Every structure is written in C-alpha cells, then in structure tokens.
Length: 126
Image (tube, rainbow, N blue to C red; front, side, top):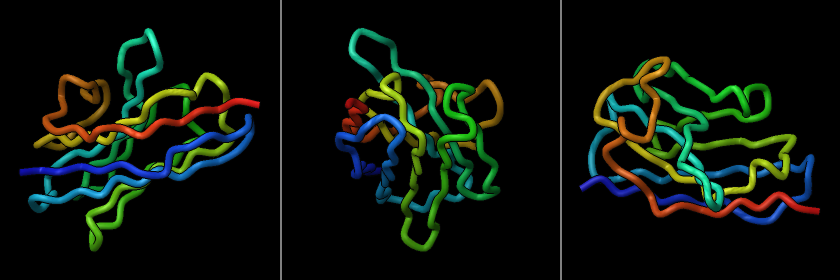
C-alpha cells in the first residue's frame, strides 16, 4: 500500500521561504508521477508542481513558476517542494500525490493521481 506523508508546513511572512517534504513508501516509484497540489479554503484543489520519478521531467503551475522548485531523492524515496518568495495567495493545505504513470503537460490534474497524503498547512501572513 502506497503511503505518502507530508511535512514542513508552517507560518511564514510574505517573501519568506519554506521547504515541504513528502516521504513515500509502499513500493518502488519507477515510472510513477509524484506531485504537489494545494487547496485553499473555499477553493478547488489545484496542481502546483509535478515530477516524473524516472525521467526527472517537471511541470509547474504558472502561478508558482520561478518561485517554487520540485525535486526528489530516489535513494530516500522523498520528494521536496522548495517555496521561495511566498505570497499570501500561496496560503493553502498542500498535498503530496502519486499517480501510477508518468504525466506530461495538461495531464497533471487531481483526477490523474491515485494516492494522496493527508496534507500540510502553509500560511503566508504578516
């Protein structure tokens, strides 16, 4: 059974940085896609960033390009999201998710993911 556990959320001032981690277990992830999604109160869950575990191709939402960086450590089965220049609009619960196939372009969406973590809360406020 795939298990995804997020950590690293917290409260940060605008312009600050946070690094989220997602510890993945339960199988080997070769050929899988792992991504970060977020959901703000009253809004739908949206794609933030994704990475194909084997080929290392990445995808970002336009709203985070140039500010967020996704990466993974295959030896530790861990995925990261480095978030810089944070804005109040980045405030949300952030979820790690895993899909059982590589994803490209517009295919990165919540409906394409098979497993989800429980989320970690990020609050950007002065």
